[in-house]
Picture 1 (cartoon, helix red, strand yellow):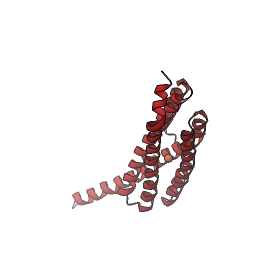
Picture 2 (cartoon, protein in one colour; picture 1 turned 90 degrees about the horizontal axis):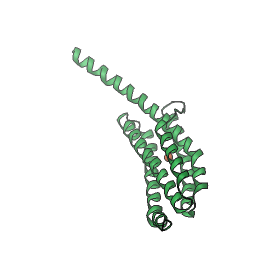
Picture 3 (tube, rainbow, N blue to C red; picture 1 turned 135 degrees about the horizontal axis):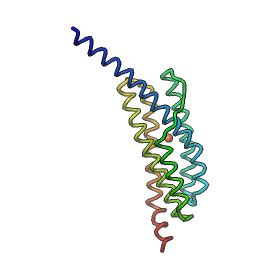
Picture 4 (tube, helix red, strand yellow; picture 1 turned 30 degrees about the vertical axis):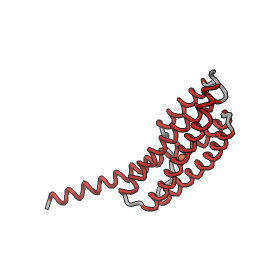
Length: 178
Ligand SMILES: [Fe+2]
């Protein structure tokens, strides 16, 4: 009997811990998405290709939607929307800014911008995938649906950036060295 009661206690406390972890990771990605809203317009200004500029414009609108969706998620969890600094994303953005500033203006810089954006996308894909896994275990269906919508959009953005790099930029970047 004592064993059963202990097991129940452990399960309950693990579940509370996971809910806290979900909130903490949501706060981190909320900071990250808000930071991206400030950074993406600068990347657009530095880019040369019209296709890349159009993709970044689209991405800014999508990022705004991701921020709004996170606010819906906090509200569904009856939590106040809050942000904690995301050191991981900040590091990616800092490194990206250095790489971009050192790249020759034109196709090479565009290639550096795409590379930086794709590192961000992969960070977001990993983050939203983890958050969705937590929401699933916690049986937070509404939260899970919202997270999966964003996850799908992040994957799509990554594919769009890959397509621009494959069809246009990386080849031009090679030519510009010749
Ligand atoms: Fe996003």
